[in-house]
Length: 608
Image (cartoon, rainbow, N blue to C red; front, side, top):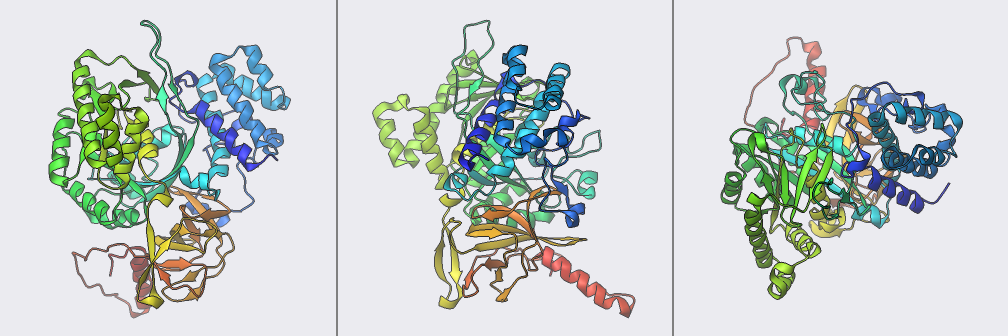
């Protein structure tokens, strides 16, 4: 087996080739369907297990174990990734002879399956091989414990007023990053529903009721090749090859479920505030803004629904500045509105970005800006640079010296510094349901939002009158983690943890700081994908995971050291707005009823 470093390099190279931005590698995606035996076990990128089957999870389970035809490749996943890179490239750029030679070291059955799939269904070939490689790369990249892992990790939440398009946006993010194979709408006619709305009631009502966690990976686009001469296809964007791992929590928008937003923002490093391009700032937008400010969360704004009648991003921008009292500038200009919305103009890079293909999966970048937008582009760019110069002293010196000759890197760095200091909120725009603007938003998440170690974290020493103790996102230090969400399942309690310091392994026991009791050994550590779970061997500082076999209340701090009395601040819990009295009809049911109420209280801190 080759070294972990080489594995990561190979996985990184593969993701640079297969991302949706690289239009030459993509055909139109098709919904998941029956595949040849070579790929039959890869129904999702990481073969997660439904929560209903949690009790049957086994640590020995592997996404590769069900497919005997690729057993030889399970022994050398780097070889598999290398050949898949060549195979994907061969699907559009290589001759049949070159493609065949790239599979020379595979077994005859594996090579035959790949070749047949490529010949008869290129679109499915691209999708399925991408999902297979994602399975391997996700298993390697998660919780590596190395500084590079932390540097390229983002923990974000997506929040907004109800019906602003949060869950639809998350669905597109999961699709473009390869986490799901097909898009399903919140209120779609197929009756499937969005991935993150896993509760039956959520799909019935078409709203998000509880927060849901997922994860994905994205390769950042650093720039674009110059547009070729007129009459030729635009060049595909260049990729820097760096893969970012993103943990996402999709939160409800309805005021009745605001505690879900509260506890999610408590443990996240960054956020995306979604604003409707038609309705603008709404009541719950103001609430979410206060919550983000309460926890000092750096954020981006995504003005959504620009393809809807009445969309007006300028009106939304004005309302955001006035009602939220924030300093924000658009990083994009829309190319058309309502039914004519085609894409966006990147203000920083002076590029037009279009989204082609049946699902907007083909990103086309052109340096030729539409004539009607050239003057607005320069005005918006000048406003952006002046604002950054006012907020960032380092950039002010550069701006005064070279004015409009500032490089893209200098502008990006200034935006990032101002965003992390919460002086500035970058604004992006598009239409999630119209499949436009989502990939640049992912770029912005990677470029401008913080890694876990970039957000100062403190605990409070209960033995020293709650003296502040700085925490370090270092897996080598003692564990400090916060239980921010409890989920009661038929098979037991599932506890969602955010690790701020140290490392957690399966079989470890942790100390509940509130009770000073040591837990039983942790049975399972799970990486969540909505209502599905994938077991991982360990988690490190910066990770968000769920564990089974850990009894506690929401807001509990856990440490690995019994002598430690470090406690993390819990989330803000709003006062209940409804009070009532409930009595049981039969005295024999009183004990069971009290037990049920106690479970409700542990799961929802607003229930008291």
